[in-house]
Length: 276
Image (tube, rainbow, N blue to C red; front, side):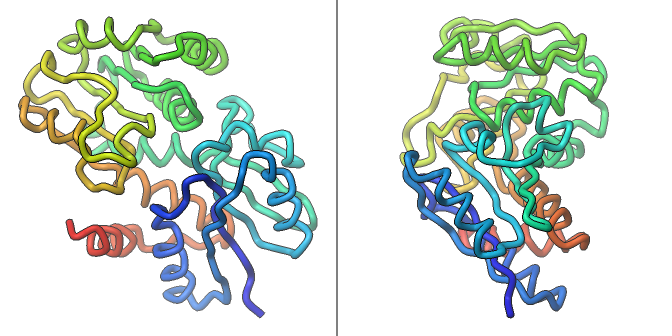
């Protein structure tokens, strides 16, 4: 009998997690099936409890539930507890344990573009949600020099700095102030959902970036958002959300199964589906 896995989110129709995980199950000879679940906010607790009740093996959590899901879990991995956001849950012996693979997945994804050299870099994160929390806390452990957060709601960004501060220098900026300071950064990371549903929306203008700045958008569908197109037009080195997506997905798969999947195969599947 197949073990059930899935992803809880809203919206969810854009997710390619079923594509990569179902293929990884097949490639590794595992009797598993991964499904997308569209969940309304008021039904999140019931959805989590339902997966536990039917003996599912685990699930992912995506926008907008990465923080809201925590009260419905039994345990948290230390890093997920530090972050205060969960994107992966493992169900074993009737216990649901939450993890955060967003942050470690992002660090793995971005390392090649930085020549594996994080020390001395100045970083700007745009956004204050669950993904921003995971990336901030993971990046703070790499030895970077400065990491600022720009968000529409300053209090959300301030909470991230307070919860995940690892002795690095950080400032919380408005989006307007971030636009004025773009030339200060070596790496700019877009973590909001802006651009997910529109090919023309972007959280900020990138006219002021310096050439060869590394610019990432964690959105992977569409493959190249308006944010990344503008970055490229202004001389940036860009990374789409596919890299982080497959790295965090591979870490989740390993948590569920104990097996490291073929990350390059995952990437090829997603790019083929997106026409990239």
